[in-house]
Every structure is written in C-alpha cells, then in structure tokens.
Length: 362
Ligand code: 5AD
Ligand code: SF4
Image 1 (tube, rainbow, N blue to C red):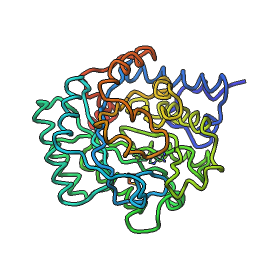
Image 2: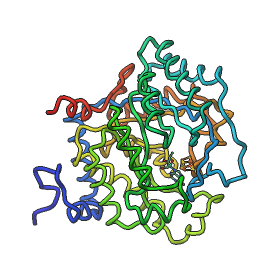
Image 3: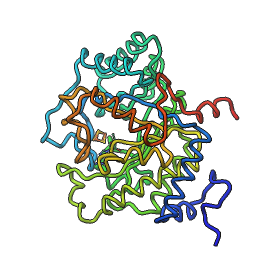
Image 4: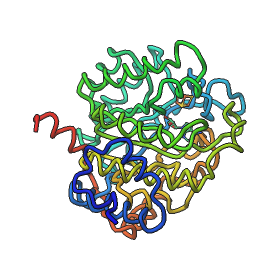
C-alpha cells in the first residue's frame, strides 16, 4: 500500500495529510523522523547552531493561564539581572564561540526596559565586534520599539503565537486588552515588515487542543512564511489556573512524541527554516533535545543565565539544568551533539536560509 511518506513534495501538505502524518506510530513514525532528518541535512547540512539564552527578568506584565511566571503567581521571587551579570553571560557566549545569543524576558513595555535593551543590543555588538548574532524574545511591543531594537543591531525576533486559533487562544489567556490574539498577530506582521528574521511557535498538548488544531497551527506558520520556529510540549505548572486540567491532558510521553512529529512535519513543509530543539523537550526526556535534532531541528539554545536566577524562571514544572553552571554545560553539549550525529556551527550566526532566499525573491 502506498504510504503518505512516499510523497515527492511535502511543501504543500494539506490539513488531512498533516493529520495523517501526526497520527503515524511505530516504524512509520520513525520513518517520518528519518525523512525529516534527510531533508534537514540536504537543506541545512549537519550543523547545529547555538544561541546562548539569557533570561533577563521574570517580571511580566501578563498573566497567561499556563505560565509559571505570570504576574498573578506570588510564589516566586521576581528578579532582573544586573548589568555586570548580563555582560558576564555575553562574554561567556563569546568565549565559547556560541555565535548568537537570545535575550528573553517576561513582558515589560516601560521606557526604562526599552532603553536598557537598546543599550544592551548596541553594547553586545560593540564588545563582540559585531560577531554575536542577536535574537530577541521580549514579547509584544510597539512597532517603534521593534524598529529601535532592529536599528540597534538585533536581527531575529521570537514571538510564539502559542496557539493559532483565536477561540482557543482566548481560553488560555485572561479576557482583557493585553491578552489579545489580533494584537499578537499584528506584532508578528510588524516584525516581518521591519525586516527581522521572524520566529514563532506554539505549545503542544494544551487543554482543549486537538490534532486538527495542530495541523492548522502548522499551516498558520507556513502561511505566515516564518523563518524560525520554536515549539515545545505544554507542561503543567501547579501555580497556574490551567493546572486544574492536569488529569485531562494527553499523557506527557504522547505530548513529547507529538512535538517530535510537529517538528518533523514542519521541516518537510519548510525545509530551509531554523527549528529549535527546545528546553521543554529535555524536561520530559533527558535525550529530548537530541531526539528533536534527529527529527529535523537544527538550533539549540543553551541556558547561560546566571545560576542564582534559574529557579525563578520556571515557566513550567521540571525545567532542566537549573542546578548547573553555564561552564558545566559546554563539553556536555558538544559531546551530546556529536553523539546525535551533528556538528556545532561554532562562531556562526546560522541564520535562516529561508529569510535570505525570500529577500532575493527566489
Ligand atoms: N509549558 C510549556 N511551555 C510554556 N511556556 C510558558 N508556559 C509554559 C508551560 N506551562 C512557553 C510559552 C512562551 C515561552 C517563553 O514559554 O510558549 O512563549
Ligand atoms: Fe509572561 Fe510569556 Fe509567561 Fe505569558 S508566557 S506570562 S507573556 S512570560
């Protein structure tokens, strides 16, 4: 019998075909991962690009119903990294030839925050002599702010849509102005118009989410013509309102395997983009990130946040590595990537080829 995996061209998969792929099991599932890995090797080679991630602050003005650092959670100490600690992390990334860093933070739209980030972006460019690529993951901001950070030297932006169906998005967020699907979508369009390499993503295994939703999420990303993607399994956090659904979720292993399939299918649909093997994968399976790399992901984001802040940036339960220094990680990362069959792209930005192909209008 002819299998869906025998298709020649996966770039225009329709919803039914995606659903069929998401339901593959056993050896068919493994063949899907193999196919995605082959496509990744053909279009992106065997390099894994590193982005050292600095979790700048867990102060967030939002109150997303799934997230451990939501403003309504009083069971954590709020922190903001000090300048010297920030630059120490940047220098760590330079010293270890990471190629790029990601600045991530809870959402903050104050002038002081915007100015601080502008200063950091310029300073990172200066001290790394332009060598470090800069990705921002700083939530929803005005177009002017995005423009300012772009002009300061940031060139990639990650803003997960979290869930691409407005009705489901509503169920996962408080009903108010600052948790508005249309606004978030507008931000994605603004970022693209400014010229950022655009990254988005979703969580997988959320309450109410079906396989049809997931298929639509992939089509959403394809239609938005993204350059980068970070998706991960939803992992419940006890101090959040969504925790009450903990007994109605897919088993955690199922969320993990669905995430691998989502990565693989997206790789087939968009062969030249960057796809991250996210930390949440490792929270479920100690080899989770390696498995994601073997299913089509090509970017890894080692945490370089100073150790003392790590247990306060718990978006979800069991976030790994909080008891490790950045130094503990580097050889570990290198050997793990090698064992998984890939090489680190040291000192390389590892930009999304998709972005440049589009710019040239090819
Ligand atoms: N489980 C998994 N991922 C989560 N995030 C927030 N809360 C959770 C959770 N409980 C993700 C969101 C956000 C990113 C920074 O962390 O997708 O965009
Ligand atoms: Fe804030 Fe992001 Fe968490 Fe929402 S998911 S509460 S915006 S850090």
